[in-house]
Structure formats: structure tokens, C-alpha cells
Length: 244
Ligand SMILES: [Zn+2]
Image (cartoon, rainbow, N blue to C red; front, side, top):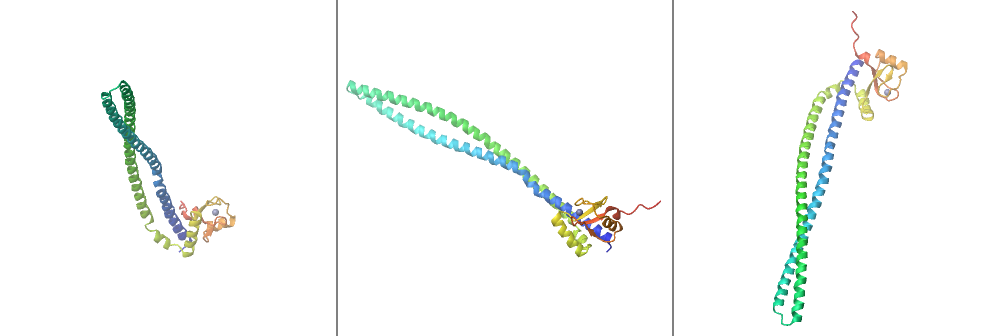
């Protein structure tokens, strides 16, 4: 196989590999798009959790207050029945004081209960609203996940299509150059660089004039003295315009 054919095959291989690399990096970057939504969701779920906790605590507090009110009301009934059974003025006075005291305790407890019930209503409705936000965000995340997965699948299909024939292209390159190509690709990202106006486009070094002449005459496949990439001149690949 002549030099030009080697070079053409290497460039074809590089076109395939670059495209695959580009598609691969797009695929890897895609799931990251969901990070923001996931963070928002976690934050919102934390908030709702704290609200639910507060509702539970307030409910417990209200239950305690209700039980205490029940006890106060029982004590009030006892105090009242005691009042009716008093025989002396001294007993009557003591029982009256007890009834007054219980009355005050009950009205304080009732005021407290009213407040707690209001707070509970507000907290519960807030938590309910945030529950809906969580559901909406979950739906949004699921939609986005599906879109990302669909894109990934499409890109993977594209990779499969792009790599059809890659083996055949590799088979056209001499094994020694294939080895050089693979090493350069893994170390430097890509292996074959054009020379434009005497400079290697892989590292932008000006090539020695003798090397540039060798490339112009296509005497042999050469590598850049600085970056090691396989270098070529574009004009050696494009057929000269037929003279008219
Ligand atoms: Zn170079």
C-alpha cells in the first residue's frame, strides 16, 4: 500500500475516532444536567420533612393540652360538688376559691388550645402545598431523565453507525503505524496533524525545511519532531487541478 493510501486510511480512522470521542463526552456530560433538579428536590424534601415533623410535634402538644383540659374539667366538677356540700362559711370560702381557680385554669387552657389549633392549620396547609411542589418537581425530574436517556440512546446509536467499517479502515493501515497511531491517540488526544505554512498544527512548531520538503514529495510517513504526531501536507492529498 502506498504512502498516500496509508495517510488517507489514518485520517479516515482519526475522523471516526474523533467523532466517537466527541459523542462519548456528550453522553458522559448529559446526566449532569439533572444535578440541579436533584439538588432542588432534596432541598424541598428536607423542608417538607421538617414541616411534617413540626405538625406531628404540634399534634402531640395539642393532645396533651386536651387531656389536661379534661382533667381540669373533672377537677372543676369535683370542686363544684364540694361547694354544694359545704356546711360552714369557712368551707364555703375555700371551695369557692377552688372553683374560681379551676375556672381560670380552664379558660387559660382553652385559649392555649385555640392558638395551637390555628398554628396546626397553618403548618398543615403549608406542608400540603410543599407536598404538591415535591410531586411537581418529581414529575419534572422524571421527564428530564427520560429525555436524557433518549438522547443517550440516540448518541449510542450514532456511535454504532459511525464505527461501522472502523475495523476495515484499521486493516488498511500497516501494523507499525497503527501502533504509533494508537499510542499517540491515547497520549495526545489525536495522532495525525496537518502541516500548514510549514508548521505542525498539532503543536504549532515550525518544521525543519528538509522535513517539509520530504512531506511535499511524499517520500515517507514522518512524525513531528516536537509532538510526535504523524504529519502530512494537505496539498499532497488533494489532486492537482487538471491543466487547461
Ligand atoms: Zn507537532
